[in-house]
Image (cartoon, rainbow, N blue to C red; front, side, top):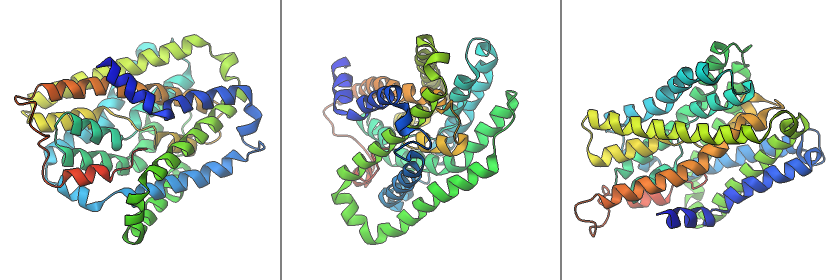
Length: 351
């Protein structure tokens, strides 16, 4: 199992790219900072628009309709994503407030407010032989809700924790212009270029990841110039990794308990566990720039989701394999509802 997880991460050059982006930002912070030679702030806006344009082209409306009727599953997944996570932050924040820097606590709040992933949630559900159409619907619907709910939750939580408040109106406006509008345009373009998009999906997915790496590089360039490594030590990284891992384990345990108490089928339990516990890095990095603006601590704010991303791949890969081995007849092909196979292939991997 460990070998499978390591093999999966070895193939995903994106994780190595994140470490490289942080390293380059540490060595050359003036290159990617706001006003630097790359004009990264302009490139970031263009890149964010293109990423969500491609997400709009890649999301099939048919895949959403396949799983729309299972309202109990949808309610649990969205409640886990946008209620359970923020409640956990509310419960834990007073306990660790005296030990964590304010910017890092804001980063954990942001992590808890993010939507679910699309690609890995659906992929893990498929591996575990769960309800794939339901996972496609919930992960996709979560991403759409996140455009509105993520900045709202962050703003409310920040004020409740004693912050001075974020400009929610400006953040919602920027998100609508740079994320929602390109997504809608992508849905329209899908009618004309959907076939081409499917044939060149690997290129599009790699482009998504390169844009995210550029945004990570830009965020850390600004943070390094703002004193990231002089104000925070290696202990901050260790605490962030530990906190991200604990948060994931708590949410996974609670989602399993909840779905079994509600009498979910094993297939629905699997979809709820994976969709309700995942958090998206692909949408999280672009949205952070719009919500927090040119905050010099943006690199610190992004640390929790950057650690949570690889941890969820490790843990959920193990969990998906365990679910798959619990089938009565492991030789039987995955019992996904009709039409689910083509829908999985159409989801954007970068999400």
